[in-house]
Image (cartoon, rainbow, N blue to C red):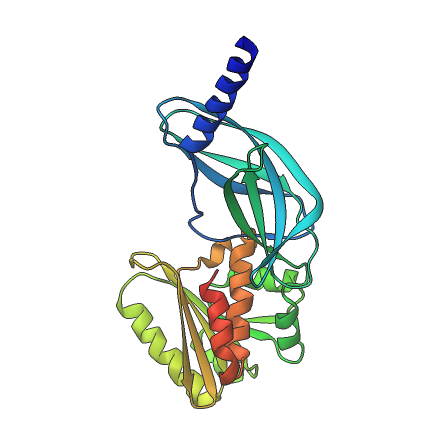
Length: 281
C-alpha cells in the first residue's frame, strides 16, 4: 500500500506541474536555415505557486497544408524547471532536414505519457533562398537606393548582382527593372515625400520597386505591414517595420525580403497568394 501511495503521489505531483506550465505563443515566426545546427527558442510560464519540474519529450513534425507528418529519427528528451510565477526561455538544439523551398515545422512538447504540453513552430529556409533574386539580377543588377550598405553586401554574398545608387540622379543611368529603396523614417513627412517619389518613378519607368520603411521615431501600432500599389506598368511594394541592418543575422527577414521582391515581380493574378504568405509570417 505504501509503495502504491508513493507512485500515486509522484504521478499527481507530475500532473500538477504540467498543469501549471504554459507554453507561450511566439511573438513572431522563427525562421532558420535548414540543414544547419541552430537553437529554437520557447518561453514557458509557471502559473503555479511552487517551482515546477517537468520531464518532456520533443518530436519534430513537418507541416504541409493541414497535415503534420513526423520527421523520422528525430526525438529529444529534456527536463523543464521553472520557478513559481516566472517565465523562462528555453531552447532546443536542432538541425532541420534540408528543404528545397521554405517549409514549416512544428516541435511538440509532451509528457512521458504522451500528454501534449505545447508546441513551437519554425520555418526552415533552403540554402538557395535567394535563387529568385539571382535570376532577377542575372541580366541587370538590382538597384539599391538609400541606407542599403548591409543589404548590398548580403545580396552579393548570396550571388546576386547589385548596384548602389548614391543619389536620385543616379536613376537616370540605371537601366535595371528592380529597385530596392531603404531609409529610416525620422519624421512623418519623410515617408510621404519618398512615397510620392517611388510611386511616380514606378509609373514613369515601369519599374518594380520594393520600398523598405524602417521605423525610428515613428510608431507602428500594428507591427510590420505590406501594401501593394500598381502605377501604370510599374509596381510599388511598401513594407514597414523591417530593419535592414538586421538582415544578415536574421533568416526571417531574409525570407521576408525575398518574398517582397517576388511579390513586386509577380503578375496581378498571383499577388493575392504571395501577399497572403507574407502576412502569415
